[in-house]
Every structure is written in structure tokens, then in C-alpha cells.
Image (tube, protein in one colour):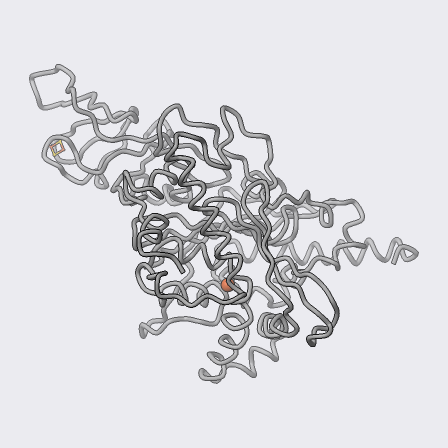
Length: 453
Ligand code: FES
Ligand SMILES: [Fe+2]
């Protein structure tokens, strides 16, 4: 548990708050770039600030305060110009740095002293990132999945109605999978009369996750260069099939989680961006990479989608993994009162996670740089999980990949997409095409090298 004061420090994200100041030391993903294709101007709310993201006619993205300086019309209705965004009411034009550079109906042509708030933006891997901290901005980190080549990608976005830390603490909690994605999943399908059909279709998630609950000796956590890793140690003496350690997803501070290694047929960043104190922008950055000798189907852009959380009757949809997680986060309340918790031994990584967050907040408070800020240039690729891709990117991948723990996620063409939010994604047919090609390449490689089996 935490004191209420400590809880406030970790959860509030507005300007001037301890965690808000920490967050402003990172490039923040604020939207898929493909969202600007339908409409080049859109409102965004990030860290409690109301802003407008736009792409001007020259193709450059901009991010400015949402209230026109003249009579405060919301700039989400603005008109993109060659040099910025023009207010739709009387045409005042704002440059990317927030200066008002044209007031077409005014005879007084002197430039205004006042400016709109503005932030730097950059694009990488189909996401738009904002820098809301002190200048000069450091380099935008090139995390592995963002820059991974020869892959199909798609981006799922949801607004979650609770504080960001509840979403991110899910990551520090390897044990929840057993119930939320195992027993609870099974219970929901049973209640809806869908269990038999789903299991007959080759369901994998329920079976695997329930099994993860058998023979747990301890939950471990360890710091990494970029955040922390954690997992479950199993003991045969306690009923597990064997003594083994099962690594869970990896956390890259402050708001990234990575599942699956870069270069594998399915990997993902789950990014929990604070919209304000009680809302979170949840981004699933999904990457399906092709191994050597296989070419991923091409895409014009990285498409985005919003996985549905409720059906037409307003009932929650709970038969896929992300939806199960999301309902748990919201069910903890707007901002969970951590002074009221009773933690168990399975929560050891969560305690670590809170300490790490508090340590990094203190660094910023004392004028120092927190972790994962990379100075003027980023390495070409940063392996956030601290694991170089080896299995799937090696020339003999077809002989080794069976050791990969989530290998069923290379079989979306055989129905395994059903348990994940990926099933709703606009690129899912391309993913199935890719997974089919991987299987064919694997079969061909094995047939041509029978001695290697
Ligand atoms: S309110 Fe924006 S130009 Fe008048
Ligand atoms: Fe989960």
C-alpha cells in the first residue's frame, strides 16, 4: 500500500505535478499518424492539456493550444494552411511555433506578442510523438518495434476511463493472467454459451493461462537497463510440470510494455499515455515480422483501429485479452486509493514498479535526467526488452522457433487471432497472409533439410 500523499505523487499528471513533470521528460506518442488521413485536424488531450494536432498543407505535423487567441474558438475546426493552421472564424493563422502570423481582416498588421501554446512533434513508425518538456528536446528513442523492417503493422487505440498507472501496473502483475485471461475468460464464455464452440475452434488462451496458475513458487522482478522484467518461477514440487522460470512481458519506463521479441511473427508495445488524471490513451502497437526468406505484404501506411469494448446493447465485450485487462483497470475506480490495498506476495513487482517511478520523479525534482532519455541522438535501434532478436531472425529460424513461448501467435491464419484485440485490426488479413507464408516457408525449409530436424 501507499499513503494517499504518495499515491497522489505517482498518479497526477497535470502541469507542475511531480509525475506530470516526469512525463514531460519523454517523447509522448499522442496519435497514429494515419488518424490524420481522414481529417488532418484533430483534438487531443494529453497530460491534462487540451491541444490540436494537425498536418499542414506542406505535410508537416503541428501541435498547438486549442483556443484561438482572438475569441477562443476551438482550433479543432481549423483549416490547414501551407504555413500552419488557420482559425475558421476570422482566419487568424498560427505557425507551428504558436505565433499568429496572419490576421487577414485586421488593418493592424503588427505581429501579436502573445502566442498559442505549441509543442514539437515528430513521427516514427506510424506514430506521432509530442515533446511537452523543457527545450532543447532530446532525441526521439528508436525503440525496436517502431523501426522494425519487413513487417506488417497496425495500431489499436482506446480511451480507458481511469488513471494511467492502473493500466501500467497491470504489467507489473504477471499473476493476473491466470484469472483475468484464464478462469474469468472461461466463465464469461460459459455464461454466454460460447465456451464449447470457442474451445472446439482450437482455443489456446484459456488453457494456457489457467495452467500458469499451477505450481507457482514465486513472482520475481529485476531491474533492466530500460525498466524492469518480471515473471513467474515454477516448482515441480508444487505441482508444476517442471522447475522453470517463465519470463513475462518487459517494461520500458515510463509507459511502454513489450510482449514478444522484436522480429517474431507477433510482438507488441502496449503504451499507456496519460490523457489526464482519470483517462488513459491505450495504444497497442502491433508488429508481425517476417523471418529471413519471407517477405511481409506491403502497406501504404500503418493503419489504426479502435477495438470495440461494448456491443450494440451496451454490454461489455470480454472475450479477448485486452478487453479483459481494460475492464479490470476501470473496475478499480478512477484513481485507485492505494492506501486501502492489501498486497500479497504476487504483488512484489508492483511494489518495485512504484519505487522505480518514485525514484525517477525525485531525479526530475532534483534537476537530473530520468532513465530512457537519450541525449542528442538515439541509437539506430534500442532493444527495450534487453534481448537481441535471435530465434526468428536467424537463418535457421525454422529449426529453433518452436522454443518461442508464444508460438501460437504465429498461427493467426489458423484462427488464433480470435483471443486478441488484433482480430479487429484493419491489417489482420495481411497478418494471416504473412503467417501462412511463414508456415509454408517453414515446411519447405524442413523438407529440403531433413537431416536438421
Ligand atoms: S476566433 Fe479565431 S480568428 Fe476569430
Ligand atoms: Fe492481462
